[in-house]
Image (cartoon, rainbow, N blue to C red; front, side, top):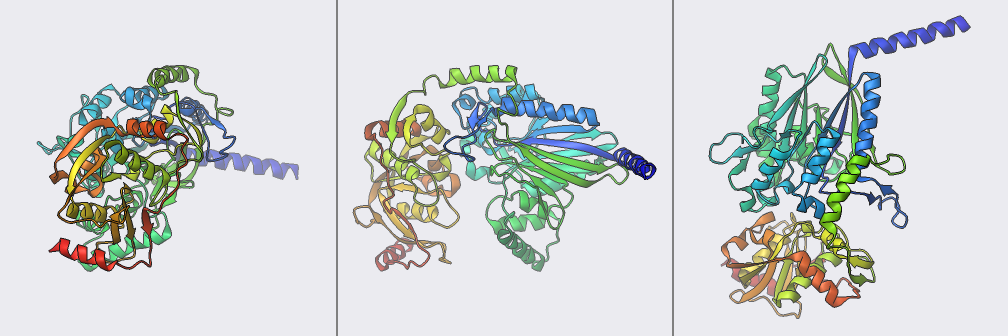
Length: 567
Protein backbone atom coordinates (compact mmCIF):
# COMPACT_ATOMS: atom_id res chain seq x y z
CA UNK A 1 0.00 0.00 0.00
CA UNK A 2 2.83 2.37 0.90
CA UNK A 3 4.60 1.47 -2.37
CA UNK A 4 1.43 2.27 -4.37
CA UNK A 5 1.09 5.62 -2.58
CA UNK A 6 4.74 6.41 -3.36
CA UNK A 7 4.19 5.63 -7.05
CA UNK A 8 1.07 7.84 -7.13
CA UNK A 9 2.98 10.75 -5.60
CA UNK A 10 5.79 10.33 -8.14
CA UNK A 11 3.26 10.27 -10.98
CA UNK A 12 1.60 13.43 -9.69
CA UNK A 13 4.95 15.21 -9.50
CA UNK A 14 5.83 14.03 -13.01
CA UNK A 15 2.47 15.11 -14.46
CA UNK A 16 2.75 18.51 -12.77
CA UNK A 17 6.27 19.05 -14.09
CA UNK A 18 5.22 18.04 -17.60
CA UNK A 19 2.25 20.38 -17.41
CA UNK A 20 4.54 23.20 -16.32
CA UNK A 21 6.95 22.40 -19.17
CA UNK A 22 4.09 22.58 -21.65
CA UNK A 23 2.64 25.89 -20.46
CA UNK A 24 3.62 29.45 -19.78
CA UNK A 25 2.21 30.94 -16.57
CA UNK A 26 1.61 34.68 -16.95
CA UNK A 27 0.36 36.77 -14.03
CA UNK A 28 -1.42 39.89 -15.25
CA UNK A 29 -1.63 42.61 -12.58
CA UNK A 30 -3.81 45.61 -13.31
CA UNK A 31 -5.09 48.87 -11.84
CA UNK A 32 -7.40 51.52 -13.28
CA UNK A 33 -8.99 54.88 -12.47
CA UNK A 34 -6.58 55.85 -9.71
CA UNK A 35 -7.81 59.46 -10.08
CA UNK A 36 -4.97 60.80 -7.96
CA UNK A 37 -5.93 58.67 -4.94
CA UNK A 38 -2.41 57.65 -4.03
CA UNK A 39 -2.49 58.09 -0.26
CA UNK A 40 -3.96 56.12 2.63
CA UNK A 41 -7.75 55.82 2.72
CA UNK A 42 -10.42 53.62 4.25
CA UNK A 43 -12.56 50.73 3.00
CA UNK A 44 -15.74 52.62 3.92
CA UNK A 45 -17.89 50.26 1.85
CA UNK A 46 -17.02 47.40 4.20
CA UNK A 47 -17.84 49.10 7.47
CA UNK A 48 -18.87 52.78 7.40
CA UNK A 49 -18.46 53.19 11.16
CA UNK A 50 -15.12 51.39 11.60
CA UNK A 51 -13.65 51.04 8.10
CA UNK A 52 -10.41 49.10 7.65
CA UNK A 53 -7.40 51.23 6.73
CA UNK A 54 -6.02 51.02 3.19
CA UNK A 55 -2.42 51.91 2.44
CA UNK A 56 -3.01 53.36 -1.03
CA UNK A 57 -0.54 52.78 -3.84
CA UNK A 58 2.30 52.26 -1.36
CA UNK A 59 0.51 49.11 -0.15
CA UNK A 60 -0.34 48.14 -3.74
CA UNK A 61 3.39 48.37 -4.49
CA UNK A 62 4.02 45.91 -1.64
CA UNK A 63 1.45 43.52 -3.11
CA UNK A 64 3.09 43.82 -6.53
CA UNK A 65 6.48 42.93 -5.13
CA UNK A 66 5.04 39.95 -3.27
CA UNK A 67 3.51 38.66 -6.49
CA UNK A 68 6.77 39.21 -8.38
CA UNK A 69 8.70 37.26 -5.74
CA UNK A 70 6.20 34.41 -5.86
CA UNK A 71 6.36 34.38 -9.68
CA UNK A 72 10.15 34.38 -9.68
CA UNK A 73 10.22 31.35 -7.41
CA UNK A 74 7.69 29.43 -9.53
CA UNK A 75 9.02 30.43 -12.96
CA UNK A 76 5.99 32.55 -13.86
CA UNK A 77 6.04 35.89 -15.67
CA UNK A 78 4.41 39.14 -14.51
CA UNK A 79 2.81 41.90 -16.61
CA UNK A 80 1.66 45.13 -14.89
CA UNK A 81 -0.74 47.60 -16.59
CA UNK A 82 -2.83 50.62 -15.61
CA UNK A 83 -5.95 51.41 -17.67
CA UNK A 84 -6.10 55.19 -17.35
CA UNK A 85 -7.58 58.21 -15.54
CA UNK A 86 -4.49 58.49 -13.44
CA UNK A 87 -4.42 61.99 -11.85
CA UNK A 88 -7.68 63.96 -11.88
CA UNK A 89 -9.65 63.77 -8.65
CA UNK A 90 -7.45 64.83 -5.73
CA UNK A 91 -5.45 67.94 -4.83
CA UNK A 92 -2.18 66.04 -5.07
CA UNK A 93 -3.08 64.59 -8.46
CA UNK A 94 -4.06 67.97 -9.87
CA UNK A 95 -1.37 70.12 -8.30
CA UNK A 96 1.45 67.79 -9.38
CA UNK A 97 -0.02 67.45 -12.89
CA UNK A 98 -0.03 63.68 -12.44
CA UNK A 99 3.64 63.39 -11.55
CA UNK A 100 2.82 61.80 -8.18
CA UNK A 101 1.13 58.89 -9.99
CA UNK A 102 3.83 58.65 -12.65
CA UNK A 103 6.49 58.49 -9.94
CA UNK A 104 4.55 55.60 -8.40
CA UNK A 105 4.34 53.85 -11.79
CA UNK A 106 8.11 54.13 -12.11
CA UNK A 107 8.78 52.92 -8.57
CA UNK A 108 6.41 49.95 -8.91
CA UNK A 109 7.83 49.12 -12.37
CA UNK A 110 4.65 49.27 -14.43
CA UNK A 111 5.10 47.90 -17.93
CA UNK A 112 2.72 50.45 -19.49
CA UNK A 113 -0.37 52.60 -18.94
CA UNK A 114 -3.28 53.80 -21.05
CA UNK A 115 -4.74 57.30 -21.38
CA UNK A 116 -8.19 57.87 -19.87
CA UNK A 117 -10.64 60.65 -20.66
CA UNK A 118 -9.90 62.60 -17.47
CA UNK A 119 -6.20 62.61 -18.31
CA UNK A 120 -7.19 65.27 -20.89
CA UNK A 121 -8.89 67.54 -18.34
CA UNK A 122 -6.09 70.12 -18.64
CA UNK A 123 -5.78 69.68 -22.38
CA UNK A 124 -3.48 67.94 -24.83
CA UNK A 125 -0.51 69.98 -23.64
CA UNK A 126 -0.45 68.32 -20.23
CA UNK A 127 -0.98 64.88 -21.80
CA UNK A 128 2.16 65.43 -23.87
CA UNK A 129 4.07 66.51 -20.76
CA UNK A 130 2.95 63.43 -18.83
CA UNK A 131 3.95 61.11 -21.66
CA UNK A 132 7.38 62.75 -21.87
CA UNK A 133 7.82 62.49 -18.06
CA UNK A 134 6.59 58.90 -17.77
CA UNK A 135 9.15 56.11 -17.52
CA UNK A 136 6.69 53.38 -18.56
CA UNK A 137 5.43 53.77 -22.15
CA UNK A 138 1.85 54.82 -22.90
CA UNK A 139 -0.32 52.85 -25.34
CA UNK A 140 -3.46 54.39 -26.85
CA UNK A 141 -4.10 53.40 -30.46
CA UNK A 142 -7.20 55.36 -31.49
CA UNK A 143 -5.72 58.88 -31.28
CA UNK A 144 -4.62 60.66 -34.47
CA UNK A 145 -3.11 64.04 -35.26
CA UNK A 146 -6.04 65.93 -36.81
CA UNK A 147 -3.81 67.68 -39.36
CA UNK A 148 -1.66 64.82 -40.59
CA UNK A 149 -4.06 61.96 -39.88
CA UNK A 150 -1.09 60.07 -38.44
CA UNK A 151 -0.51 58.54 -35.03
CA UNK A 152 1.04 61.26 -32.80
CA UNK A 153 4.72 61.30 -31.91
CA UNK A 154 4.49 62.59 -28.35
CA UNK A 155 7.16 62.32 -25.69
CA UNK A 156 9.83 61.28 -28.12
CA UNK A 157 7.76 58.29 -29.19
CA UNK A 158 6.81 57.26 -25.66
CA UNK A 159 3.20 56.89 -26.82
CA UNK A 160 2.52 53.87 -29.01
CA UNK A 161 -0.57 52.14 -30.44
CA UNK A 162 0.61 48.81 -29.07
CA UNK A 163 3.48 46.98 -27.41
CA UNK A 164 4.72 43.45 -28.02
CA UNK A 165 5.93 41.38 -25.05
CA UNK A 166 7.64 37.98 -25.30
CA UNK A 167 7.39 35.35 -22.59
CA UNK A 168 9.42 32.32 -23.56
CA UNK A 169 8.07 31.13 -26.91
CA UNK A 170 4.84 33.11 -26.51
CA UNK A 171 4.48 36.55 -28.11
CA UNK A 172 1.72 38.82 -26.80
CA UNK A 173 0.51 41.99 -28.51
CA UNK A 174 -1.12 44.62 -26.25
CA UNK A 175 -3.29 47.36 -27.80
CA UNK A 176 -4.40 50.45 -25.89
CA UNK A 177 -7.81 52.07 -26.49
CA UNK A 178 -9.59 55.16 -25.10
CA UNK A 179 -13.38 55.60 -25.03
CA UNK A 180 -15.25 56.55 -28.20
CA UNK A 181 -17.08 59.19 -26.14
CA UNK A 182 -14.08 61.54 -25.95
CA UNK A 183 -15.67 64.28 -28.12
CA UNK A 184 -18.61 64.51 -25.69
CA UNK A 185 -16.66 63.97 -22.46
CA UNK A 186 -14.10 66.73 -23.01
CA UNK A 187 -14.53 70.33 -24.21
CA UNK A 188 -13.23 71.01 -27.72
CA UNK A 189 -10.36 73.15 -26.44
CA UNK A 190 -8.99 70.20 -24.46
CA UNK A 191 -8.76 68.09 -27.62
CA UNK A 192 -7.25 70.63 -30.01
CA UNK A 193 -5.10 69.05 -32.69
CA UNK A 194 -6.31 65.47 -32.24
CA UNK A 195 -9.15 63.23 -33.34
CA UNK A 196 -10.26 59.70 -32.45
CA UNK A 197 -10.93 56.61 -34.52
CA UNK A 198 -13.62 54.08 -33.59
CA UNK A 199 -12.32 51.71 -30.91
CA UNK A 200 -13.54 48.45 -32.49
CA UNK A 201 -12.22 49.05 -36.00
CA UNK A 202 -8.93 50.35 -34.56
CA UNK A 203 -8.51 47.12 -32.59
CA UNK A 204 -9.23 45.11 -35.76
CA UNK A 205 -6.52 47.02 -37.64
CA UNK A 206 -3.83 46.51 -35.01
CA UNK A 207 -4.93 42.96 -34.17
CA UNK A 208 -4.18 42.02 -37.78
CA UNK A 209 -0.88 43.91 -37.72
CA UNK A 210 0.18 42.16 -34.52
CA UNK A 211 -0.81 38.78 -35.92
CA UNK A 212 1.30 39.50 -39.01
CA UNK A 213 4.21 40.19 -36.65
CA UNK A 214 3.84 36.76 -35.10
CA UNK A 215 1.83 37.56 -31.97
CA UNK A 216 0.08 34.50 -30.56
CA UNK A 217 -2.10 36.25 -27.96
CA UNK A 218 -3.87 39.62 -28.19
CA UNK A 219 -4.61 41.81 -25.17
CA UNK A 220 -6.56 45.07 -25.27
CA UNK A 221 -6.32 47.55 -22.44
CA UNK A 222 -9.33 49.79 -22.84
CA UNK A 223 -10.46 52.87 -20.96
CA UNK A 224 -13.95 52.15 -22.26
CA UNK A 225 -16.10 50.93 -19.34
CA UNK A 226 -18.47 48.00 -19.09
CA UNK A 227 -21.98 47.69 -20.48
CA UNK A 228 -23.49 44.31 -21.29
CA UNK A 229 -22.27 42.27 -18.33
CA UNK A 230 -25.90 42.42 -17.21
CA UNK A 231 -27.74 39.67 -19.18
CA UNK A 232 -30.78 41.84 -19.89
CA UNK A 233 -28.60 44.51 -21.46
CA UNK A 234 -26.63 41.97 -23.47
CA UNK A 235 -29.86 41.16 -25.28
CA UNK A 236 -29.93 44.74 -26.60
CA UNK A 237 -26.57 44.20 -28.29
CA UNK A 238 -27.79 40.94 -29.82
CA UNK A 239 -30.81 42.74 -31.29
CA UNK A 240 -28.53 45.38 -32.82
CA UNK A 241 -26.48 42.57 -34.35
CA UNK A 242 -29.57 40.99 -35.88
CA UNK A 243 -30.34 44.33 -37.52
CA UNK A 244 -26.79 44.56 -38.85
CA UNK A 245 -27.03 41.10 -40.42
CA UNK A 246 -30.47 41.92 -41.86
CA UNK A 247 -28.83 44.92 -43.52
CA UNK A 248 -26.34 42.65 -45.25
CA UNK A 249 -23.37 43.48 -43.04
CA UNK A 250 -20.78 40.85 -42.22
CA UNK A 251 -19.78 40.07 -38.65
CA UNK A 252 -16.23 41.04 -37.77
CA UNK A 253 -15.94 43.89 -40.29
CA UNK A 254 -15.49 47.65 -39.69
CA UNK A 255 -18.86 48.28 -41.36
CA UNK A 256 -20.55 45.93 -38.91
CA UNK A 257 -19.12 47.62 -35.80
CA UNK A 258 -19.81 51.08 -37.21
CA UNK A 259 -23.48 50.10 -37.61
CA UNK A 260 -23.65 48.88 -33.98
CA UNK A 261 -21.96 52.06 -32.75
CA UNK A 262 -24.53 54.26 -34.51
CA UNK A 263 -27.43 52.13 -33.23
CA UNK A 264 -26.14 52.28 -29.69
CA UNK A 265 -25.74 56.06 -29.78
CA UNK A 266 -22.67 56.25 -27.55
CA UNK A 267 -19.26 54.65 -27.16
CA UNK A 268 -18.58 50.95 -27.52
CA UNK A 269 -17.58 49.43 -24.20
CA UNK A 270 -15.74 46.38 -22.92
CA UNK A 271 -18.53 43.93 -23.53
CA UNK A 272 -19.39 45.36 -26.92
CA UNK A 273 -15.75 45.04 -27.96
CA UNK A 274 -15.37 41.49 -26.66
CA UNK A 275 -18.52 40.46 -28.55
CA UNK A 276 -17.95 42.39 -31.78
CA UNK A 277 -14.20 41.94 -32.30
CA UNK A 278 -12.98 38.34 -32.62
CA UNK A 279 -9.40 37.60 -31.68
CA UNK A 280 -9.13 39.47 -28.37
CA UNK A 281 -7.95 37.06 -25.67
CA UNK A 282 -8.04 39.45 -22.68
CA UNK A 283 -9.51 42.94 -22.24
CA UNK A 284 -8.13 44.92 -19.28
CA UNK A 285 -10.79 47.52 -18.49
CA UNK A 286 -11.22 50.89 -16.86
CA UNK A 287 -13.51 53.95 -16.94
CA UNK A 288 -16.57 52.51 -15.17
CA UNK A 289 -14.84 51.84 -11.80
CA UNK A 290 -16.15 48.27 -11.75
CA UNK A 291 -14.77 45.21 -10.01
CA UNK A 292 -15.08 42.19 -12.27
CA UNK A 293 -14.35 39.13 -10.20
CA UNK A 294 -14.48 36.54 -11.57
CA UNK A 295 -13.75 37.90 -15.05
CA UNK A 296 -16.58 38.34 -17.53
CA UNK A 297 -16.18 35.81 -20.36
CA UNK A 298 -17.83 36.79 -23.62
CA UNK A 299 -20.27 34.07 -24.81
CA UNK A 300 -19.21 34.30 -28.46
CA UNK A 301 -15.45 34.88 -28.50
CA UNK A 302 -14.58 33.82 -24.93
CA UNK A 303 -12.66 37.05 -24.40
CA UNK A 304 -11.86 37.55 -20.72
CA UNK A 305 -12.74 41.01 -19.37
CA UNK A 306 -11.24 42.26 -16.10
CA UNK A 307 -11.39 45.51 -14.15
CA UNK A 308 -10.25 46.41 -10.62
CA UNK A 309 -12.58 48.98 -9.06
CA UNK A 310 -10.93 52.44 -8.71
CA UNK A 311 -9.14 55.07 -6.60
CA UNK A 312 -6.30 52.88 -5.39
CA UNK A 313 -8.68 50.48 -3.65
CA UNK A 314 -7.68 47.30 -5.50
CA UNK A 315 -5.04 45.45 -7.45
CA UNK A 316 -6.46 43.03 -10.00
CA UNK A 317 -4.78 39.71 -10.73
CA UNK A 318 -5.44 37.35 -13.62
CA UNK A 319 -3.39 34.14 -13.85
CA UNK A 320 -3.16 32.83 -17.40
CA UNK A 321 -1.83 29.43 -18.41
CA UNK A 322 -0.81 29.44 -22.07
CA UNK A 323 -0.13 26.23 -23.96
CA UNK A 324 3.30 26.45 -25.65
CA UNK A 325 2.43 24.13 -28.53
CA UNK A 326 -0.99 25.49 -29.44
CA UNK A 327 -0.19 29.00 -28.20
CA UNK A 328 -3.58 29.46 -26.59
CA UNK A 329 -4.89 30.18 -23.09
CA UNK A 330 -6.01 26.85 -21.65
CA UNK A 331 -6.77 27.87 -18.06
CA UNK A 332 -7.21 30.99 -15.97
CA UNK A 333 -8.01 32.11 -12.45
CA UNK A 334 -8.37 35.55 -10.93
CA UNK A 335 -8.62 37.63 -7.78
CA UNK A 336 -8.71 41.25 -6.66
CA UNK A 337 -6.39 42.26 -3.81
CA UNK A 338 -7.47 44.98 -1.39
CA UNK A 339 -4.42 46.89 -0.07
CA UNK A 340 -5.16 46.62 3.67
CA UNK A 341 -2.44 48.18 5.80
CA UNK A 342 -2.63 45.27 8.25
CA UNK A 343 -1.77 42.64 5.64
CA UNK A 344 0.25 44.71 3.12
CA UNK A 345 2.45 47.23 4.89
CA UNK A 346 3.09 50.26 2.67
CA UNK A 347 6.40 50.44 0.83
CA UNK A 348 8.29 52.96 2.98
CA UNK A 349 10.12 54.80 0.20
CA UNK A 350 7.00 55.19 -1.94
CA UNK A 351 4.90 56.17 1.07
CA UNK A 352 7.37 58.87 2.16
CA UNK A 353 7.54 60.43 -1.29
CA UNK A 354 3.75 60.39 -1.72
CA UNK A 355 3.09 61.83 1.73
CA UNK A 356 5.45 64.72 0.99
CA UNK A 357 3.51 65.47 -2.20
CA UNK A 358 0.19 65.22 -0.33
CA UNK A 359 1.26 67.51 2.51
CA UNK A 360 2.28 70.28 0.14
CA UNK A 361 -0.87 69.91 -1.95
CA UNK A 362 -3.41 69.85 0.89
CA UNK A 363 -2.06 72.29 3.46
CA UNK A 364 -4.69 74.92 2.56
CA UNK A 365 -7.65 72.50 2.64
CA UNK A 366 -7.63 71.18 6.20
CA UNK A 367 -9.87 73.76 7.90
CA UNK A 368 -13.46 72.88 8.90
CA UNK A 369 -15.87 75.18 7.01
CA UNK A 370 -19.33 73.79 7.87
CA UNK A 371 -21.36 71.15 9.71
CA UNK A 372 -24.15 69.06 8.22
CA UNK A 373 -26.89 67.26 10.15
CA UNK A 374 -27.03 64.45 7.54
CA UNK A 375 -24.84 63.10 4.72
CA UNK A 376 -25.27 65.15 1.54
CA UNK A 377 -25.46 62.42 -1.04
CA UNK A 378 -25.45 61.74 -4.77
CA UNK A 379 -27.83 59.35 -6.53
CA UNK A 380 -30.33 59.20 -9.40
CA UNK A 381 -32.56 62.06 -10.59
CA UNK A 382 -32.98 64.63 -7.80
CA UNK A 383 -30.13 64.39 -5.30
CA UNK A 384 -29.26 66.27 -2.13
CA UNK A 385 -25.78 67.09 -3.36
CA UNK A 386 -26.73 68.00 -6.92
CA UNK A 387 -29.57 70.21 -5.73
CA UNK A 388 -27.29 71.96 -3.25
CA UNK A 389 -24.58 72.65 -5.83
CA UNK A 390 -27.16 74.04 -8.26
CA UNK A 391 -28.71 76.12 -5.44
CA UNK A 392 -25.27 77.45 -4.53
CA UNK A 393 -24.66 78.54 -8.13
CA UNK A 394 -28.08 80.21 -8.46
CA UNK A 395 -27.72 81.99 -5.12
CA UNK A 396 -24.17 83.16 -5.85
CA UNK A 397 -25.17 84.89 -9.09
CA UNK A 398 -28.84 85.64 -8.35
CA UNK A 399 -30.06 84.07 -11.61
CA UNK A 400 -33.26 82.36 -12.74
CA UNK A 401 -31.85 78.92 -13.42
CA UNK A 402 -28.78 76.82 -12.60
CA UNK A 403 -27.64 73.58 -14.21
CA UNK A 404 -24.93 71.23 -13.01
CA UNK A 405 -23.79 67.84 -14.27
CA UNK A 406 -24.18 64.79 -12.06
CA UNK A 407 -20.93 63.35 -13.42
CA UNK A 408 -19.04 66.27 -11.87
CA UNK A 409 -19.89 65.07 -8.35
CA UNK A 410 -17.31 62.48 -7.29
CA UNK A 411 -17.97 62.04 -3.56
CA UNK A 412 -20.73 62.66 -1.02
CA UNK A 413 -20.28 65.27 1.68
CA UNK A 414 -20.25 63.70 5.16
CA UNK A 415 -22.55 64.26 8.09
CA UNK A 416 -20.85 66.28 10.80
CA UNK A 417 -17.79 68.40 10.09
CA UNK A 418 -17.01 69.31 6.47
CA UNK A 419 -13.51 70.44 5.51
CA UNK A 420 -12.13 72.14 2.44
CA UNK A 421 -10.69 68.78 1.42
CA UNK A 422 -14.18 67.22 1.57
CA UNK A 423 -15.41 69.88 -0.86
CA UNK A 424 -12.44 69.21 -3.12
CA UNK A 425 -13.16 65.47 -3.14
CA UNK A 426 -16.77 66.23 -4.04
CA UNK A 427 -15.86 68.60 -6.92
CA UNK A 428 -12.35 67.65 -8.02
CA UNK A 429 -12.45 68.75 -11.64
CA UNK A 430 -11.87 72.49 -11.27
CA UNK A 431 -14.84 73.51 -13.44
CA UNK A 432 -15.75 77.20 -13.32
CA UNK A 433 -19.10 79.01 -13.33
CA UNK A 434 -20.33 80.40 -16.66
CA UNK A 435 -23.17 82.94 -16.96
CA UNK A 436 -25.50 82.66 -19.97
CA UNK A 437 -28.43 84.72 -21.22
CA UNK A 438 -30.81 82.09 -22.54
CA UNK A 439 -34.14 82.49 -24.41
CA UNK A 440 -37.01 80.46 -22.95
CA UNK A 441 -37.22 78.22 -26.02
CA UNK A 442 -33.54 77.28 -25.60
CA UNK A 443 -34.06 76.72 -21.88
CA UNK A 444 -36.76 74.17 -22.69
CA UNK A 445 -34.43 72.53 -25.23
CA UNK A 446 -31.72 72.23 -22.57
CA UNK A 447 -34.20 70.57 -20.22
CA UNK A 448 -35.32 68.21 -22.98
CA UNK A 449 -31.70 67.20 -23.54
CA UNK A 450 -31.13 66.72 -19.83
CA UNK A 451 -34.17 64.52 -19.39
CA UNK A 452 -33.98 62.73 -22.74
CA UNK A 453 -33.61 59.32 -21.16
CA UNK A 454 -29.95 58.92 -22.12
CA UNK A 455 -28.62 61.56 -19.72
CA UNK A 456 -28.07 61.28 -16.00
CA UNK A 457 -26.32 64.61 -15.79
CA UNK A 458 -29.11 67.06 -15.00
CA UNK A 459 -29.04 68.72 -11.58
CA UNK A 460 -31.14 71.89 -11.50
CA UNK A 461 -32.17 74.88 -9.41
CA UNK A 462 -34.92 77.41 -10.09
CA UNK A 463 -37.03 75.09 -12.24
CA UNK A 464 -39.04 71.99 -11.41
CA UNK A 465 -39.83 69.27 -13.94
CA UNK A 466 -41.92 66.14 -14.40
CA UNK A 467 -40.66 63.62 -16.94
CA UNK A 468 -41.66 60.18 -18.12
CA UNK A 469 -38.72 58.04 -19.30
CA UNK A 470 -41.18 55.60 -20.92
CA UNK A 471 -42.26 58.10 -23.57
CA UNK A 472 -41.32 56.74 -27.00
CA UNK A 473 -40.84 60.25 -28.34
CA UNK A 474 -37.56 62.14 -28.16
CA UNK A 475 -39.14 64.49 -25.65
CA UNK A 476 -39.60 62.94 -22.20
CA UNK A 477 -40.75 66.10 -20.41
CA UNK A 478 -44.35 66.21 -19.17
CA UNK A 479 -44.04 69.60 -17.52
CA UNK A 480 -41.44 72.26 -16.71
CA UNK A 481 -41.95 75.54 -14.90
CA UNK A 482 -40.19 77.81 -12.45
CA UNK A 483 -40.35 76.90 -8.77
CA UNK A 484 -42.95 79.60 -8.07
CA UNK A 485 -45.25 78.00 -10.67
CA UNK A 486 -44.55 80.58 -13.39
CA UNK A 487 -44.46 79.02 -16.89
CA UNK A 488 -41.39 79.38 -19.10
CA UNK A 489 -41.98 82.01 -21.80
CA UNK A 490 -40.50 81.08 -25.18
CA UNK A 491 -39.38 84.55 -26.22
CA UNK A 492 -38.27 85.85 -22.83
CA UNK A 493 -34.56 85.87 -22.03
CA UNK A 494 -33.55 84.40 -18.69
CA UNK A 495 -30.29 84.48 -16.78
CA UNK A 496 -28.68 81.17 -15.92
CA UNK A 497 -25.42 79.73 -14.67
CA UNK A 498 -23.74 76.43 -15.41
CA UNK A 499 -20.26 74.92 -15.52
CA UNK A 500 -17.76 75.71 -18.26
CA UNK A 501 -17.82 71.96 -19.03
CA UNK A 502 -21.50 72.02 -19.98
CA UNK A 503 -21.34 75.52 -21.49
CA UNK A 504 -18.83 74.20 -24.02
CA UNK A 505 -21.37 71.61 -25.22
CA UNK A 506 -20.28 68.53 -23.27
CA UNK A 507 -22.58 65.50 -22.83
CA UNK A 508 -24.95 66.69 -25.54
CA UNK A 509 -25.60 70.28 -24.44
CA UNK A 510 -24.65 71.68 -27.86
CA UNK A 511 -27.23 74.56 -27.84
CA UNK A 512 -25.08 76.37 -25.26
CA UNK A 513 -22.33 76.88 -27.85
CA UNK A 514 -24.42 79.34 -29.89
CA UNK A 515 -25.37 81.51 -26.89
CA UNK A 516 -23.38 84.48 -25.49
CA UNK A 517 -21.41 83.38 -22.42
CA UNK A 518 -19.33 84.92 -19.67
CA UNK A 519 -16.91 82.66 -17.86
CA UNK A 520 -16.47 83.96 -14.32
CA UNK A 521 -13.37 81.77 -13.89
CA UNK A 522 -14.55 81.14 -10.32
CA UNK A 523 -14.20 77.44 -9.42
CA UNK A 524 -17.56 75.89 -8.59
CA UNK A 525 -16.04 74.19 -5.56
CA UNK A 526 -15.25 77.67 -4.18
CA UNK A 527 -18.88 78.65 -4.73
CA UNK A 528 -20.03 75.49 -2.94
CA UNK A 529 -17.65 76.21 -0.05
CA UNK A 530 -19.05 79.75 0.21
CA UNK A 531 -22.61 78.36 0.30
CA UNK A 532 -21.70 75.87 3.04
CA UNK A 533 -20.13 78.58 5.18
CA UNK A 534 -23.20 80.80 4.79
CA UNK A 535 -25.74 78.05 5.51
CA UNK A 536 -24.10 76.00 8.25
CA UNK A 537 -25.46 74.00 9.98
CA UNK A 538 -26.73 72.29 6.83
CA UNK A 539 -30.03 70.43 6.95
CA UNK A 540 -30.68 69.65 3.29
CA UNK A 541 -33.82 67.82 2.13
CA UNK A 542 -35.25 66.83 -1.26
CA UNK A 543 -37.97 69.19 -2.45
CA UNK A 544 -39.42 67.44 -5.52
CA UNK A 545 -37.80 69.61 -8.19
CA UNK A 546 -37.23 66.50 -10.35
CA UNK A 547 -40.16 64.11 -10.61
CA UNK A 548 -39.48 60.91 -12.55
CA UNK A 549 -42.86 59.30 -13.21
CA UNK A 550 -43.43 56.42 -15.63
CA UNK A 551 -47.21 56.95 -15.52
CA UNK A 552 -47.17 60.74 -15.97
CA UNK A 553 -48.98 62.29 -18.90
CA UNK A 554 -48.19 65.51 -20.72
CA UNK A 555 -49.52 68.64 -19.05
CA UNK A 556 -51.85 70.17 -21.71
CA UNK A 557 -50.46 73.68 -21.15
CA UNK A 558 -46.90 72.45 -21.48
CA UNK A 559 -47.83 70.42 -24.57
CA UNK A 560 -49.20 73.60 -26.15
CA UNK A 561 -45.96 75.41 -25.26
CA UNK A 562 -43.88 72.68 -26.95
CA UNK A 563 -46.04 72.85 -30.07
CA UNK A 564 -45.45 76.61 -30.29
CA UNK A 565 -41.74 76.06 -29.73
CA UNK A 566 -41.49 73.64 -32.63
CA UNK A 567 -43.22 75.97 -35.12
